[in-house]
Length: 148
Image 1 (cartoon, rainbow, N blue to C red):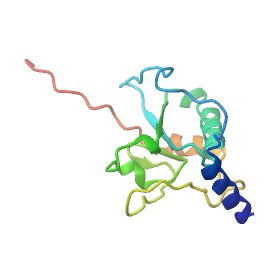
Image 2 (image 1 turned 90 degrees about the vertical axis):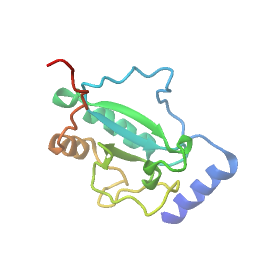
Image 3 (image 1 turned 135 degrees about the vertical axis):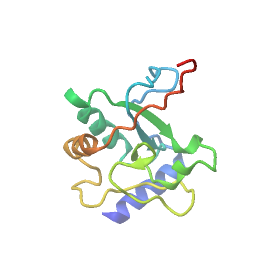
């Protein structure tokens, strides 16, 4: 099975195939509100689990978790010094920390991530929801007001 994934990924790199599916581009995205918590979906095209994690994240963000905003970050477009390049694709970050507790790599690199301890390499919507519910929501930074 691992060999099939490696061959498939190598084929993607050689032919430039897209992972398919739809995602919001920056021009279609709704501006993020500083009053609502943000979960970042780190990805780059070609990783086989990105679409599945994107879909499961959307499934998880219902009811009391609807307050969360999603910011999709294409790792291939980041500055080489950006610390988010130390995480594989796909990854969910809240406040700069991996939602599932993964430790970032020592240095920047583009790599595909497989979530161990999952049936199909990606956490379920229920697992994502549980982690978001247990997560302390980062509070927006407010500038001090003057004259008080």
